[in-house]
Image 1 (tube, rainbow, N blue to C red):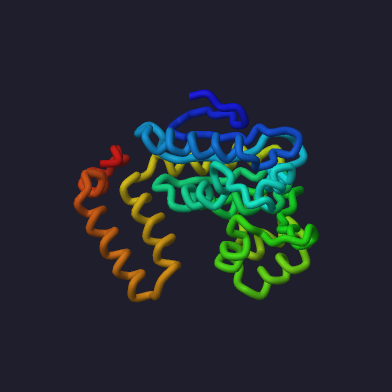
Image 2 (image 1 turned 60 degrees about the vertical axis):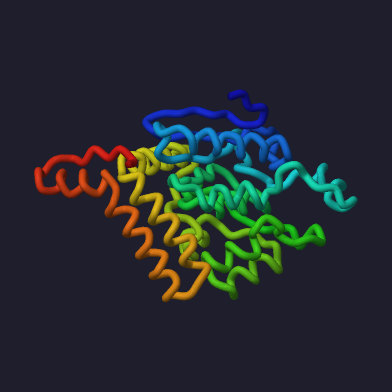
Length: 257
């Protein structure tokens, strides 16, 4: 498939999606359309076991929503694809999605990273939700995902002041999994994704589902979701292969079935 605002590559079972909308990788309709299309393509491709989302350019992973499109929102116009829809697709994706945040991310760019399952961040980057300084609010899940990741109190401080957090703060708060030098971000994300790509697809899909859905309900309901996920996994060929590989003291060859 062809893309206008996204560079799409595949290597070692990993689909690599690079935002390519200079100068700031604004998340306009064309970018959201390409992301949505590429995710659908990756979902239907059995060779794809994990996804990495990163950005082009040196200064920004993404500056967020395309401000030039704001008039359409204010006039009541509805975009063809909503940021919410794409981000929910990422969050609920049955294959692990790793954000390689090689540079600073603001607003929708930060919200995009938060929708990914795992995040690698450049040591020189900052993350922020500056919308309040424009008289608006984080509108693509920032007011909901950030509190779920770091808790209400600190999330409110970040959203209400609009002040960015450093990479070290992001690591300390649990926003990201790892902080590495800028030049190592993509390679670290690829290495993590490649490791995940060698794992058991059925089990990972059910882990992602159980954790994501379980966080939105009570512990009791969450355990029910987990039990249902376990039933799916134990009925899979991957589970049989995992047990056989363990007993035979060899690496497992998971097929995702």
